Structure formats: C-alpha cells, structure tokens
Image (cartoon, rainbow, N blue to C red):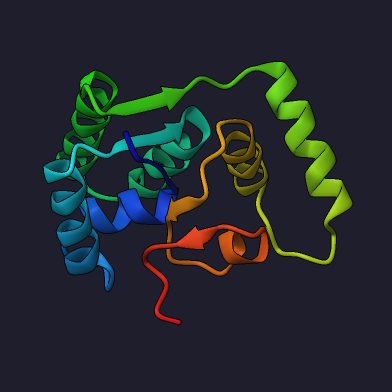
Length: 140
C-alpha cells in the first residue's frame, strides 16, 4: 500500500473551504481514498491543526475536533503519537538547521517520514522539498 505523510497545511486546507488550497486538497484526498493510500500524520500535526482553528467560532472548533476524532478512527489514517524521544530528536534537528525556517513540528514530521521510509508529503510549503521529500500540493 502506498503511504504519504499529511502535514498541518493539508488538513487545514481540507477542512477550511476558504483556504486557497481547499479544492486541490479535497480532490487529492478523494483520489487517495479511492486508491486506498495510507495516510500518516502525527499528534504534533493535529495539535497545530486544532490550534489553528482555536480562533474560529465554536461551531468550527467543534467540527474540526470531531473530524480529528474521525481521522484517528479511519482505517487508512495512522496518527503517530508524540513521545519524549521523538521530541528530543526533532529538537536536535531544529537546532542543527538554523539556516531553515522549519518548525519543530516540521522537524518531527521529517524524522517520522525518514523512519517510515515515506518520500511523499501532503503539504504546500517549501520545507518538505528542502528536506528532500516530494510535495504533492506544491505549485512549483
């Protein structure tokens, strides 16, 4: 089964109809579901997702929280839990790459992708490309 990693920007775009990447994310997600592609994400990514929607009205907040619960139950979605070792390794990478504007969550995502031999990300920023991964939402 093919496997991809889903970054925060992908989930935000998928769940926010006003996001500039919404249509592309929705089309891509539907295609991945039809192909039964395995989607990996992390608790850190989902934390960023929920943090992003925390400033929205209560209906949107609740809807996104329910969607996160559904994601965690979806047979083709795997959520990697956060742990101290992972955090510490991501922090080391964060410190090593001061030349990049990578977030700690990005660093954690890169480490997960390398550990699971995932080469493709559902992301729209350049950080995944900088780290050597294919980025399915990239305009370039």
